Image (cartoon, rainbow, N blue to C red; front, side, top):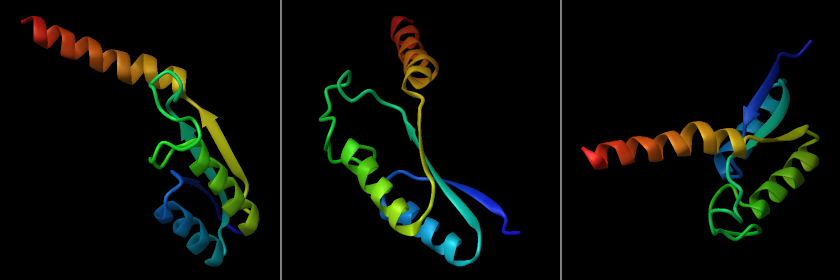
Length: 99
């Protein structure tokens, strides 16, 4: 039985290549993408904003995974990321700015 591997993918060439190499080495590969932003809230273009994690990049990843017959999952962590990373960072910057 092949070892299972879950590869975190961003939509870039590196993560797609990692999927292909692992699959070709006999691993049972799945791909996972973490959605960390609500693009509409941060002023980005929801379809193409020039970064690795745009909706267009996610759709391309889905196509790549379909072609390679690799399961693809998108986990929406935008709320948790905002609460635990962004808000804590902003609070920390505000505290330092006040001192």
